[in-house]
Amino acid sequence: VVCVENITNVAALAKVVMEETPHVMLAGKGAEELAYKNGFQAEQLLTDSSEAAYREWLKTSEYKPIINIENHDTIGMLCLDQHGDIAGACTTSGLSYKMKGRVGDSPIIGSGLFVDNEIGGAAATGMGEEIMKTVGSFLIVELMRQGKTPQEACEEAVQRIVTKNKNIENFQVAYIALNKKGETGSYCIHPGFAMMQYKDGTNSRITSAATLDS
Ligand code: GLY
Image 1 (spheres, rainbow, N blue to C red):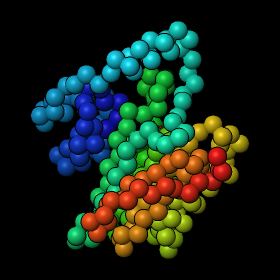
Image 2: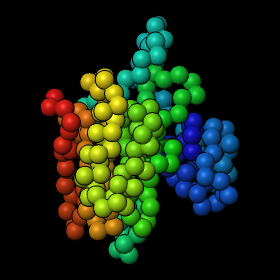
Image 3: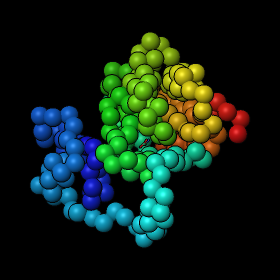
Image 4: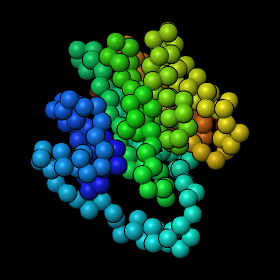
């Protein structure tokens, strides 16, 4: 689902589109109407602090999107169940201070998230435009199909962006990946990105290796 307002759990709404409609993606009001028909409640998503920040931004209204370089702006999840089946979800409020109508990578299948139950899954966070231009999550799954480990595939997908950009100091991209064997990988441009892994009853926080030193 794309450009949905007033609904907190948009990943759950995307699941309704997947399971209950003949479509792959719904946008805006149509997606919101489907949500209400399926029991979702309208919620005020704007916090006092984000409204105050927005009012401050209105003074200049400059479209200079700021991506959170230190860590991430999006939640991507990949799961392997006891039957060996893989599922994934991705949810975000997206880049701040963007132009009206801007769509990021998160809802775009193959960019912010891709799962092929024969191979594995991948999810992205960071500057959506760069992820979309390289169809990053799909790329990672295809690299795993060719025999790369999740770690090698994440590194190659980040490298693809790095070699095509002269300004990587100004944005972050990070990927996580999981294959059918339960192996995981993650990689990012700027240090600071971490993923949580739950495996064999243990939670661990894994700090990703990065292209840049600082
Ligand atoms: N990765 C989220 C966005 O670019 O909006």
